[in-house]
Length: 326
Ligand SMILES: Cc1cc2nc3c(=O)[nH]c(=O)nc-3n(C[C@H](O)[C@H](O)[C@H](O)COP(=O)(O)OP(=O)(O)OC[C@H]3O[C@@H](n4cnc5c(N)ncnc54)[C@H](O)[C@@H]3O)c2cc1C
Image (tube, rainbow, N blue to C red; front, side, top):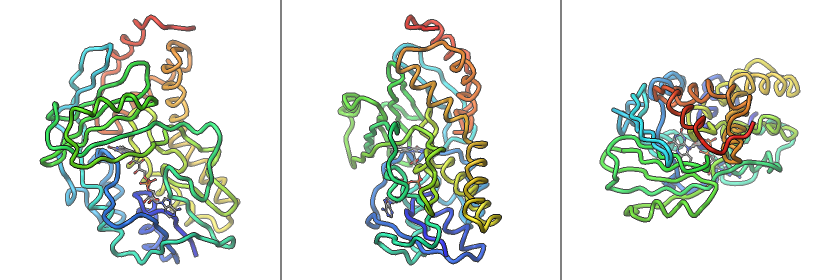
């Protein structure tokens, strides 16, 4: 028997993968039905479908808006219009509500030291527990009906402290800010709030803190969120697929942990470099060897989100920055 705590995207995905393979699974969730999740709802349509088909779900049934163009702007560089390579928004709330409606989950605390508990509780790491030096950004997001931007828009805040986004939905928009400084939330003041959502987001991989005795983490609880784009949906699904494959292979929990951790580090190890890069920019330590090494991974993580990027204008921007340390 396997317990799953948390039925966000990573918990739901692994629940259906395990059930579909004949595992005995118990699920636990604490949020109210129809809770409006803080999330931009953006993902790479081409990539997500490769995974959702494993749980008999199709992104096209939830699609809100395909990206035509994507604008990247910053306080210190002129806006670049980039092409989409699969970026879209989808109704994540509806998808999760549909998936959860067929699950007879419990609302309570798991007290089971015998069996494996999968911690898919996201930011809270309820069963994995907190670690020192976690790295979270504050976020605030509005659902609104008018935005200054028709297409997908990212505005990078000064000094690597976060970004503002505006993502089109069908007739509405998600506008939001993820930042180290809550004063930046004032960027949202001009927008009408049909709904207001807020929570922290984990932008640090916690791949050395994925276990707590018989508890094994997946998704945002272990930090599968791109430190550059804040993309967490696809990476969290991927982490659950990796865990699922290892659960199928290994009965022994110690062996399972070793192989799962190795596979997670292989897939997402570059997030550690990206998290360091963002912190280096924040600390004005812009040009050093590790940052240069990370640039190809910036391109990778932006491409993975479904955005074609030419990295040169951004390198030039940072290379011209006055605050350079060697
Ligand atoms: C404002 C904002 C905007 C974002 N925009 C995007 C975006 O556009 N695209 C993108 O790819 N990513 C985005 N992300 C990140 C992405 O939403 C998450 O990284 C991803 O959904 C993580 O999935 P998860 O299943 O691991 O965790 P979650 O989705 O957080 O799910 C965790 C679940 O665990 C439940 N839970 C918590 N504690 C307990 C407990 N003790 N017992 C049982 N259940 C519990 C919660 O109720 C929740 O349902 C955004 C994040 C934020 C905050």
